[in-house]
Image 1 (cartoon, rainbow, N blue to C red):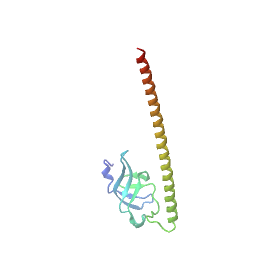
Image 2 (spheres, rainbow, N blue to C red):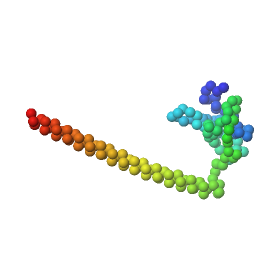
Image 3 (cartoon, one colour):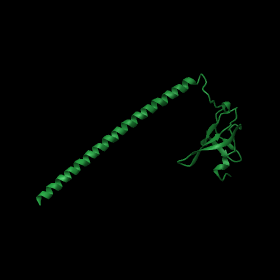
Image 4 (tube, helix red, strand yellow):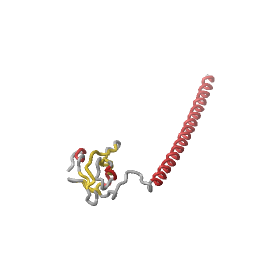
Length: 144
């Protein structure tokens, strides 16, 4: 049984079809939750990953951990470079991301303006209340 997080380093990882993917070189850890998010395979099997480029396998893909790690899912082949037929899809995704980023930016600016307007309204209300209180206090002082 694994007793420390470092015990994962160097472990062999196999796909759900029993094909060796590679050994764990590092872990991807979410710092806020202190949970393992992925397994970093620095030199994966070139039969599974194009050009044997490093990959990060999501932790949720793990089926079991023992002497080796067995995945419940891994793609048949991971392409790491855009091919001519994938370039239009990549461009479309990039355009969609830009569109969503722009829309999000507009919403953030709108929210900032709305928040500033609310702060100004509260500030004016507070100033008016202070002035009214000062007038009451002044009129009360003159009565004596």
